[in-house]
Image 1: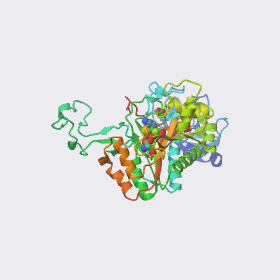
Image 2 (image 1 turned 45 degrees about the vertical axis):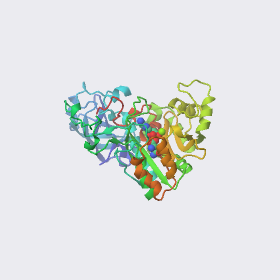
Image 3 (image 1 turned 90 degrees about the vertical axis):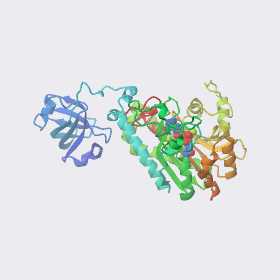
Image 4 (image 1 turned 60 degrees about the horizontal axis):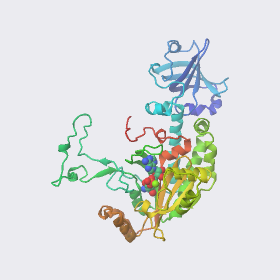
Length: 475
Ligand code: 4AD
Ligand code: MG
């Protein structure tokens, strides 16, 4: 079954052939002798211009006004070359069938462009707009290119669990999954004194579904490590969850993460893999999503194509954390948050580094102080920093976070103790260091931030179909 994307460019080969299109009416312009109906089926940005005249079957739908913006239709006709400048081909309609009518006075999407804030309130209908159609197709292409890159490079895709008992990042940002609270959220099903408690007044987790507290995962990394230490190179690609109360344009409570894990690898291998991956997927969308990318270049961020070509063609800049602090120290401007060795970089610092100081190129910052990073990162010989790396990109800030993992059992045990983490609950993770440990490294890339980078969309809520943010879980 042909879609608009199949004929919009190559349509000239099919001139004179009959075809049918199923889609949604974008506009309907009635003129005295002919009527132009623009139909979109979501397969591409282009509409099919359908030219219908009073002799065509179904013309009564035009006369009655049913062919309105948002209605779904089937149009059958002959593909002919178009006189119009906007398209190469158009459909000379023989038959129009109304599939689903629309009440024009109630349909919230009008020809005039709506604000993205408004479109978030109609997340169920916004994929019918040009912007969200294009974002969705580019997101799909990035996912496809991700699997293609890793598969072509010998990585095995591993499904990491969504429900877990461990907190990979140790930041205490997990959502709890429990059956102790009845799932009747409509009425008064949740009676506090029905929640089982122990004699000393604590929640009695032994009566919960899993017999202990369980959470939505913040990262699949620890599980990916176990498979890397058996299959060598693996990656995960799935949803992750963080209950961090940050209402920013870069944070979601539910986001997708790609987490490769490389065995027999160090931080340099990790950075090389991240760079090659990022360049591959960006190149892929530039080459395969040309119509959508031109749309972003014109309507969302002027010059984005040039900026992305730089990502593909130029080397990423590498810089130790210590040098980044020095760079920020010398910046001739005030920052809201303090700049000091030992403190984490805030997004204003990250954006200054990639956007202003280093001319809009991706930057890899490495060797962060151990105290601001997670327990699993490998201690460097200086005893103060860990073999960590973050990749920062213009407009988005931190896109990738990764590290070489601590593969030495004694170091890892000491680190867990120092951070007051329960060693017993990490018994399986420590086993990897007991039985055939190897140097290994990996990283996590926030998929929605990649979508932001590739499309120029400035709010992460518009990079995922149904955003989950503090106070918002509609649809
Ligand atoms: O830097 P993070 O926290 O690293 C990890 O989770 C590691 N376990 C990854 C690994 O080494 N396998 O998160 C990785 C990336 C960030 O760089 C960012 O792009 C994205 O995940 N991210 C978020 N994206 C959207 N909303 C949030 N709340 C995010 N938190 C992190
Ligand atoms: Mg990070």
